[in-house]
Image 1 (tube, rainbow, N blue to C red):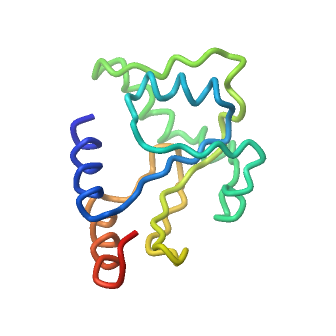
Image 2 (cartoon, rainbow, N blue to C red):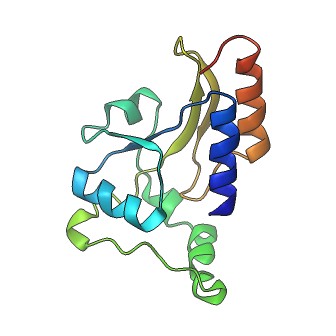
Length: 139
């Protein structure tokens, strides 16, 4: 959690606005925020228009692949809890996300569609993309 708060502070210092896009409903978003402590702005996208515009989709094979399941199996060993979501809020366990950085004009500066649920760009990649945008304009 410390890394997320630190990264949020660094991005805000660079005038980068973070928006979480969620395909579920308001109730699920509220539960997720409570559990993660996220303070980022959130856009609800129940029809997944934003997801599709970035080429994101669902994949049983990518989510249920051995390496991903192995990582999840290690959660109890490192005393990490799984998110506690009511079953009626689990819309699509196989939806893959991504991380994207856009400038004010909508130009994509960083494009990282996830290959698995835990696949994220490095902090360095995010900061490098945010830094390159600062020389042109603020996000």
